[in-house]
Image (cartoon, rainbow, N blue to C red):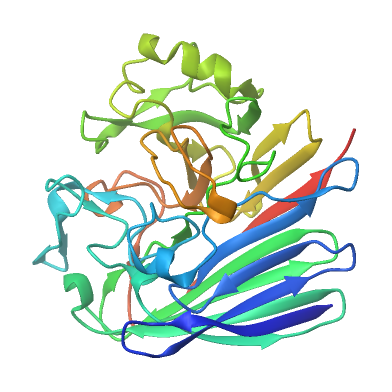
Length: 355
């Protein structure tokens, strides 16, 4: 395989930002940049061999330096929400930024991991390429404790598997819950909406939320609601009846954390199918939960090729621990990372095409 490396722009401080494009044997490619370790494009074939970029995003670094809806972002230290930005760790209280409508903490804070320069290291291989991004999040960044040493590695192979591995260690007890916030549209980033996509998630329950999308601490069975995606559901059908599901009304669509039946074992947990193009994406992870977000409030212009993105223009499948886990010890697993421990988790987005 091959990796193309280029200077894609400069930070406000004048530092060069490289873009790495990994291209496989069938000509399908993935591009990632050093700013924020952001994923900027995924170009894959449809059933007829026609290539399209299925990741929403932008053509220039400048767009990613501004608010951009977290498109393609590496999210940390904590993906998703923490109620009131407050948690207690080993008896000490911490107050984080309230960057979610001034009420809650979201995706790591006012800046988060996507607003920093990472160091990228490309490595070409036989049948697969890798780019490893590294940075140290200093003690006190966004008021999180500890120096967090983080590496995020993107691997792209000849079968169109995008493998994202997150690794981290700390010198003080801290929180760590990393994920990726790519918006997918299997018909192409400029297709318009994902209403014509079928989504399947192997989960019997979601974490019940309040009007601010903060977990209440208990679970809501999906049976009998538009949140039941176990057998696959056309998003159009679910969105048309979302007013019958009180849990969907505050979000204006799907913005829910599904607790996976497989638990923390590595395995398949979700899939997306677009019939017209024949593109199919399967998600495999060792995380216990996944957030489905259908771009419910997206409104952006000046995207790739001059495209505009509106409501439901893409969907995110963010593998994670449950939102607000530090305040709900009954939720599966832990987001606490201690000195001597290694945070090491992998998610695979596997792209295929069939008639």
